[in-house]
Image 1 (tube, one colour):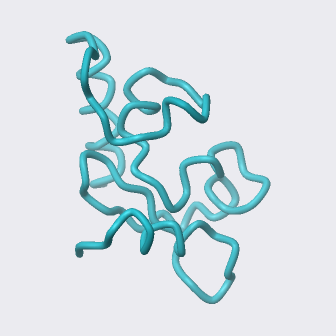
Image 2 (image 1 turned 180 degrees about the horizontal axis):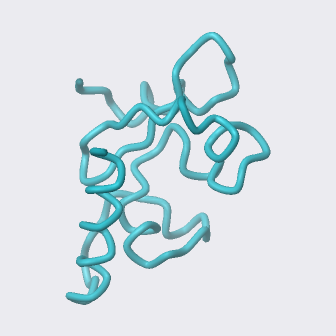
Length: 90
């Protein structure tokens, strides 16, 4: 599935009739089954409808980290991102 960043924002959990998507390295994952975490008010709601690659790699919830850029990430952070990607695949 391919969506632009603007289209992806439409799947942020604010519309209960739509799935919730989170992207990692441009790959979109349906996280609707964990609506309590990714939906409005959830612990990870800030990632919904966005590519959260950098934030997940850095284990950060800061708005400035919620983006697709991997520039400057350490090997350890890239490993953390790979772990997240495997978790989303499962």
